[in-house]
Amino acid sequence: MADISPERHRECMNRFIDLANVMKDEGVDIKVVSSALMAASAVYATFTFRGNEGGLTASGVDKVTETYKKHLNRVQEMRKAEDEARRS
Image (tube, rainbow, N blue to C red):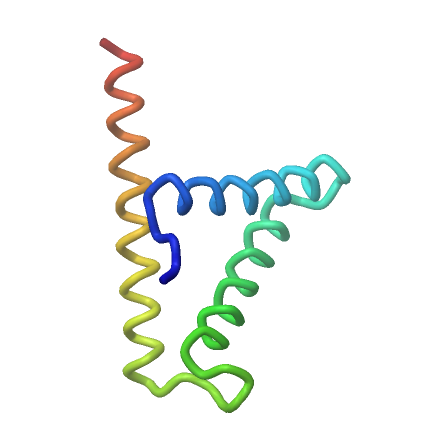
């Protein structure tokens, strides 16, 4: 069974952020780094569900898109809470 604990998730996420920061520190524009991370995520999400055989169906793309949207919304909620805590 895969380890899907919040701690393991955070650790993996932070490894990607660390790598992105290395690229940024090497002079790669942050917009390029961000776009490349999103593209890599799309490639890996496709591989996760389809392996190396074909691509996602339209409903599969919708599911991945919805999952990404949920993550993006969670990040925004956390950022707003952090900002409010700093102001207090």
